[in-house]
Amino acid sequence: MDTEIELKFLVSDAVVQLIPSLITKFAKTVTNKPSRNLINAYYDTPNRELRALDIGFRTRCSDSECEQTIKLAGEVIGGLHQRPEYNLPLPTNQPNLAAFDANIWPHAMQVESIADNIYPIFSTNFIRRTWLIESPNGAKIEVVLDKGEVVGADKVEIIRELEIELIEGSRNDLFELADLLVSQNCIRLGLYSKAARGYRLADDKPLKPSKSIGFVKLPENSTQEQALIAAMTFGIQFVQKHEQCYFNKASLKTLKRVTDGISLIRHNFWLFDDIVSKQSTEHLRNELKWLLSELAWVENAIQLKTYTSKRHAFYKKISSAPALAQVISDLKQLQPSVDDIQALFHSARYNRLLLSLTTWLIDKQWRKDWGQAQLQAAELPIADIAKRLFDKDWKNVHKLLPAKQKLTCFDYINLRTQLENSLLSGNCLGNLFDKDARLEFRLPWLDISHGMYELSTLEYLKQLCAGQEDEQLAKIQAWLDQKSEFLVNAMEQSRRASFDIEPYWQ
Image (cartoon, rainbow, N blue to C red; front, side):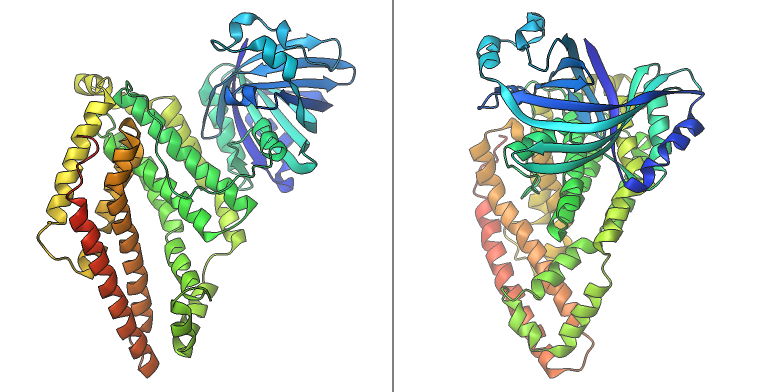
C-alpha cells in the first residue's frame, strides 16, 4: 500500500510551458521521464456502491501494460490529497476486484456482489509528463502534468492538471515547491479529483452552489480539537467548492457563498479560542480580512442587481426615477468583471492563503503555543463546550435584543454582525444536537438575519437617493421608509416569538 501525499493544481495553458523552468529553478536535480498516453476506465455498480464508500476503482493502460488501482477513503484539505492506494498489474484491461487483499476493504463490504456488478462508467484519457526531482533539502518529489479529457455519458471536460507528490522527505519541501508554483498567478489549487469530475459527468450531477452554509458533520464523541479540524476543513472546502462553481458559471450569489466560507473560517479562530491563540493565527486572520475586503462589494452588487430586476417590486419605482437609475447604472459599471475575479482566484496571494490554511491544519500549528491548560481543553468533549458557548451566545442575544424593548431599523442593522456570528457558531457545532429542535429554534433568527439584510438593502437605496433635489427621489425615499417600517414590525414579531422556543442544546 502507498499513501498519496500530493498537492493538485489546475493550470492555464499559459503556465504549462513555464513548468520545466520552474522545476529546474527549485530542484537540486531533475530527472525527466518519457511522456505517456494513459487510458483509464473507472468502474462502479449501477447503485454506485463504491462511490458510497468513497472508494475509487480504475484500470489504466499505457502501451501494452495495464494495472488496476484501488483508492480508499482519505482526506482532502486545501489542495492536499491524502488517500491509501493499492496497485496491481493486470494481464488485460479487464478489472479483477477479487485480486486485491481482502483485508483492505471496509467492514461488511460485499466484495463478491460488487465485483459481479461493476461496469465502466466513465473514462479519463490524457498525456502525462513526469519529472522526478530532488529538493535542496534532499526530499524526493514527483511532478506530474496531465493534459487530456474526462468523458462520461457522452459529455467531455478538459483535464489540465499539475500534481506534486511527496515520495520521500519532509512535507515542508512539497509546500515550498507549491509556493513557487502559485507565485506565477495563473495556477490555482484543485479540490476535485478526476474521478469526482467523472462521476458528476456520468451521473449528470453538475457542481452547483449551496443554498446556505449548512452544518459541519461532527460525531457526538468529538473532542474540541477534532471539532476545530472538522470545522476548518469544512470551511476551506466550502470556499474552494464555490470558487470552482464560479469558474463553471459566474454569479454574484456564488461569490456570496465564497465570502460565507471565509467568514466561517475566520469565526473558527474565535470559536475555538480555548486552544487557538491569536498569535498563532495573526497572519491568517490578516489575510482572511484582506480577502473579505476584496469581495466586500459583492453584497452591494447583489442589491443593485435586485433593484434593476424586472421581477422585483423595486423595479417600477426605480425606472420611474431616471436620476436614481443612472446612479445605479454607474455603480454597476464600477464592479469588478468576471475576468477580475478569476484573476483573484488565480493570484499568488489567494492561493498562498489556501496553502497557509492547509499547512496550519496539517501541521496542527495551533499546538505550538500550548501549555497544560490548552492540552486539557483540546481533549474535552465538544458537546459540553458547545452547550456552554451556546448559553453564552443566547445570554448575549437577550442582552443585545431585550424582549421588552422595541427595536428600530438602525438597532437591527447595527446588531447584524453579532447575530450572524451566533448563527455561524450553530453552523459549526449545531450538528451535535437534534435536527428538528435545531431548525425550530434557528428559523425565526434566520428570518431576522434575512430581515437585517433586507434593511441594509433598503438603507443602501435610501443613501443613493439622498442629497439630490428631485421630487421623484423624495417620493421613493418615503416609500422606502414605509417598507423599512413594515419589515421591522415583522422582525419584531419573529423576535418575540423566538423567546418562547426552548433552546435546542438544553
